[in-house]
Length: 520
Image (cartoon, rainbow, N blue to C red):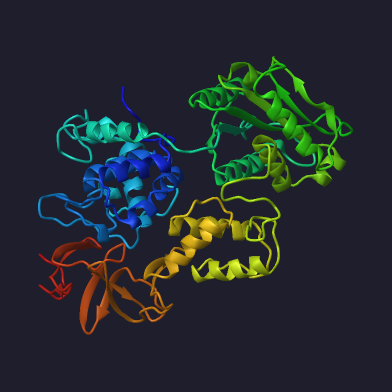
């Protein structure tokens, strides 16, 4: 019927950057730097981030802002809040929050699912949920429910035309294209013993994807989490895999039998297939961790559903036996993922992820002084991690949060690209959000405003005595001001709070009409 708004993005960050540079050669570097936020924010809510980017291109004139009702400094790349000619639209403290609001607004139209992140979309509650599940229906004239994002004719089709042009951009990526999935799901769980296959194969899967992406490869997560039957789970995985033209399909599992059987084995459909060499390298690398390579490590099994039905060369990794004490004692998700990645790539990881001998590369499991220094850097961003020199799960989680904020690849690993992005971010006046959701505005010298106003991007914000951005009503020098959910001061407009309506003048002051300040 149409192109769904919800789902996985099809276009790469590289394709989006290449498109915008072709349409707007003088595009601001800050725009190019924020493009990775579209797929990451889209993924967080299940919205196609490349569709959101195409919409931004339409609304901003390919980020020239020529004829647009919004400007770059507003961090509003979709015309949000521009409900009539002459309105300047909403302002957001950072590009990330502006893109997040746009993604959330698209989700409001597309489905009834709850938001997974705190709502930053000031117009979310105005949308009747699920009234435009297709991109084509974002145009009011084309929507059978007579609602939508914009009134202009063919609005959705214009977005799709841009999206197709983005997809037509020739990718210069040198890496492989790979499908990766964990077997089973929690409704139809896999093996269980000393540890759970269903839990651990997801940990390994996530790490494999992250490491392959950091090495410059395009990776699709084809895991099925929703099917309630074994057959449904297998069919969904195959459908997810066959939606992408890739070089390799990788299925990750753990085995079990009677507690005494042990070792690793990698299955392929038949000998001589394109997957055989990858399978042997994976088995060899896992064997180097101390696991027995059962039957030489690689076996054929044409009866396995995933191997039989996937369109691309496929392999299935049985990492080890989860009910065997010796296998379990050797196992960590990090070591297993490293072995699988080394087997796929045929060498140490490339791209931003260097070999283990590289001193400047940090990831989960690392310890020492360099981890300590990185943890201190994270805490500038309000991460609140324990500065103990141990790169554990919390340090990884906060690394991903900061990577998203500064526009780096959110892979949880710290290489030169991440360090450079953080350094560049801290050299400028910039918004910083701490892990509990509060915002402050850091000046390039490390200072910040306390208990006062500051004009940022043409918009006034107020910061309390500790430097935190305020929202809601505040009293300042015997006058009342209203700060919106994004912190921006309301000016020359009506403010609706607490079931009442208030008017604030051009300076932001609430204008009294009676004892409560409410307009009659």
